[in-house]
Image (cartoon, rainbow, N blue to C red; front, side):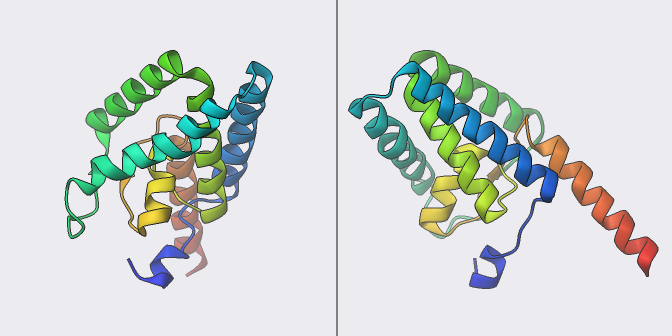
Length: 150
């Protein structure tokens, strides 16, 4: 992905605000639950590293991952559910930071891939049950506005 492609915001103002609000809420929930050093290590180092390793197994030259539709949503729900039940505080930290990074970068894919994409400079995407509907509405609204202004 080129530098200009990396700087393109793929989300609008409502998608950005939604990611900031939910990301901040998840971080507050983690802090309220009590964050220990191991939680920080797992949530902010090991979880992102696991995503990087799993996707690196595809090879550096692999085409960008595109997991949308039922498969993407099912995988997202499954991973999120397991992580939040098994490792609640690290998962809250991981998802919270990922959402804030997505908001800052304008990344429209699933937050589980935000850190991996930023570090590896890739553009892998997976359906996001929470934000995909917001992003779709903003994209269609942007397209409608650009057509009517021409």
